[in-house]
Image (cartoon, rainbow, N blue to C red; front, top):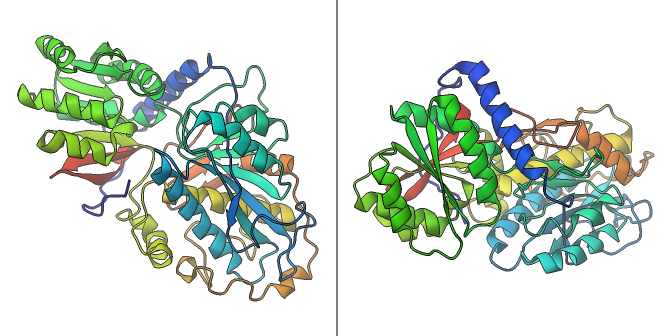
Length: 472
């Protein structure tokens, strides 16, 4: 899945329809809905399964973090990547791998860095039965000090307990299933994105701006995983805040004909349609609405942001709005330097999820640098990455200068961070990345900032990135 290269980012500043009080209320309801839904689900989740490496740190060989050293004499601190690098979610996993790799290479290209960064990938193939083995492979490498991943909700559950025992921090980029770890507040999962349904916070505002209708259909398509259930509950709680009466409907898993449900909703004279399901179902709903001449606003959740929706729906997709937790880095002005560096390194436009993985790895590298050098939290000591991609070799510099100027840092005493130290420091971190700001709640590691919701509109058969959903 590649990011659309057309269109321009929008957003004229300020939250519409009620300003910040309304914004805070919608955020609270969206977060509360996600929390309430996740609270009953067992398990505390995180990460992965294979054993390949990249990142200029000599592969995955070597002993533990305080003994593994690169050829330039610097200690090697690795970041794990738990991703689906094969299977149906491979595009998402590969986007995160390349975004993470770019951040690691840029770090290793800097003079005076206190350590050599490495990236160790574990592929679970998007299969839950492979996830635990992937997690164990990362836990077994003591030089892995934090993990990015996993790619999907389904692969998170089996790995969670494996990561929690050694206090190995896991930062969720595309995983969104929020699970409360019993009565403990010592979970290791930190959300670098809103939990399922959390990205929907602003959608009632722009839905209200597009229609004066009083009712909005909410379709929960059970053909998708649990995302649809959580997001539907969030939507049903949010819509009344914009004076909509929600009309929820469930499409059972064994039902393949969407037409009767859509027609029944149209008979109810609903003024807007909110669909929570996958791209195929979104296409079926779009086509039936189009056949019946429905002209009201149509909104879908993040899973519909997929080329399959455009291909199957055809012209019926035009006008749909989709909320997502990730940006289109090819058009977001703040991501311009990252996008240029990505194109130079990989010869293509950055796909969805690449910028988010890049930001998370930058945050981890900053944290490791603080702990290794004794710098204050939130600072950017020499050799650590900056949110804009850095200076000196910078984001466009790639890894061409990797290894240069390392001797001065090598002569300095470098502490080897412990996993629990990394987790604790990350838990209180705040970082401005190219995609959005990242920070976590102290209680359960939820994504905290009033960001993380981005809006796309289908125009002429393409997803056009509109911008921060709160500002549209």
